[in-house]
Amino acid sequence: MPNMTKKHFVWLAKEVAPNIRPEKIAEFVATVATFSGNPNFDEDKFIDALESASLDERSQNDLGPEDYKW
Image (cartoon, rainbow, N blue to C red; front, side):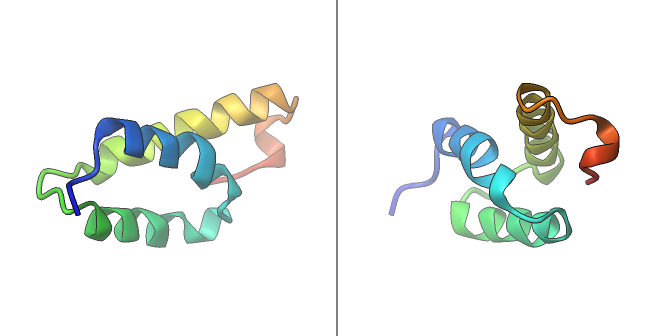
């Protein structure tokens, strides 16, 4: 299987991650890192993308910071 591309990571961050419970995010990131096959996978950068996607999702649903915690 070829390595995952940026497109895959963006899809995971925007479409999949919002459906994961906040307490499972660290486990999700570790799984993505392992599955990606990319030795240069940057967990911090991916977590930033997850947080950004989460903020976008919350703003579209009119949720405030008190409604959803990382």
